[in-house]
Image (cartoon, rainbow, N blue to C red; front, top):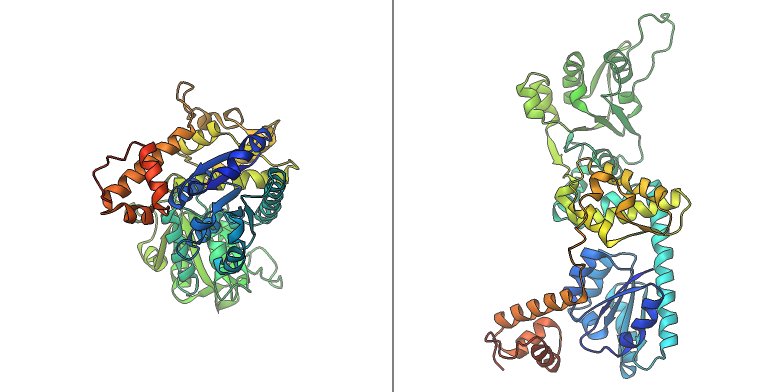
Length: 452
């Protein structure tokens, strides 16, 4: 089962012939008539293949194709064109800057077009699975976001990674602060040196003092070799302190000096280490300072560059793309074939607030991949807290008429903002005769917003 998005400016010949055949194979086809609607649908629902009319694809110096590739990097792209335009298409494609583009013409027999579509879908599956296998071992999916808030955070993080300034990461638990810290190390000039994690919440005050500061245990013989702590092992690289609020009061004093001048008081005497410090907390540090649970001087020493990682509910546009990637990665780990998310399950997932954030979403997809007997995740495979957010049965499922309503509203708005029909047609990316047909179809031919 695959999802195909068809974008054309009025020529239905090719896909009208193929729709029944492809849908009988389990594929789902959505059709729109302009690029802006296509990009909105692509960002909202995700598609495996995009077929674009040549005129839409080449508008604004192939900006539409580049946006398709940005939103769905693995999607296959096919251009539809007339036979007499083949030479122009083949000459123009390199200028698009996009790989993996095929084309079909109106004269091709349905069998040949169907074969090319299946080849394009298979290419998409191979690219997607390769991407997912990489993500199963590495956390690249965290760095792909459709949320403006998250993308700004990543831009700021990349810029901050180039410096040696101390970085404070804040945000709710499970938002991905550790993943971001690791990626900032990879982006930094220190990438070839160690990245050392110290979880302050999992160590006792005694072991924390010995582990972090590398001090010798007093009960050991004097000739015993002093254990090197993580701050020393991170020499030249990055040390990441998770749950920094859990530092005992005595160690907070020691850390003030370390953060300021990178000096440790070890059993062998003072030692200066060259490390980059990143710390993270899910608590409100100013409140902790006000309650005298966290030293004020340490707070100001750490709060040089502060980055807040948004909660998953604040980046809701990422829920389904992340879920699909995580589900695919879980399928690889559990030796399953490709898995899909039903519309009902998708609606429940986007309505749920995900208090456990990315971590909770990952766990839900891992469990769904194990529990699902077929190839489609339904609300029955989701945690109860998520599944109860599914739409009621009485709610009508989205239909293709809803896309017509969106298109009618869009055309009406453009007409209202345009002085002439020619100007409206150019804005919509269609020719004047197509606009006339659509005005009649949507009963906009008496629309007062534009003149011939």
